[in-house]
Length: 193
Image 1 (tube, rainbow, N blue to C red):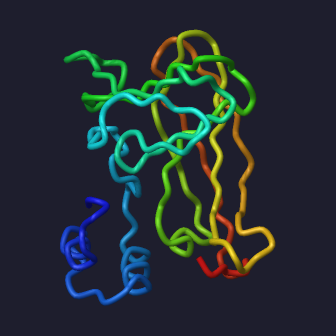
Image 2: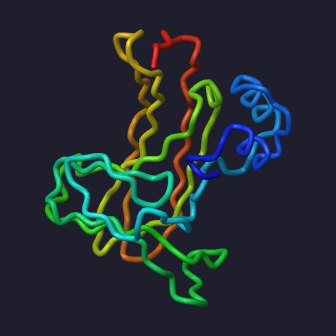
């Protein structure tokens, strides 16, 4: 689904037919759990370009993904790279991956790569699993964290955090998995935006 698609086009693309509103979509999707909630999880679509210098601003990279790196230098680059044809390190023969080259660091926290799943109530109280393949140019750590945003203007703290799980990377592609329990949305004060 493109960001500028109309609501009707999005419903058709998702196979939701005549669903009238967001609450109906959430109910329908909750009844039909999907294997993958991430659109462009394989970093295949890059409509804004394929290389970005990222610093102290939120910047979109691959479609639906954005980075924020306030403690890294101006030369920090997020870019699309191609897997070698026939590689066997990452299953299913993906075409691309996202590479981050840091200008300075690592500084804790060095920066973030973020993906927002719309409608905070959709995952309320559910177990969520994120799995991905990663590697580094040397032994390093990354942290996987989940944040639920409830908007601004209504609650003193409009975010719910889960703990950051630190995981080690090596110079070889390795599958990583992080499990999270999403806080229940009804225990939070919903905000106006």
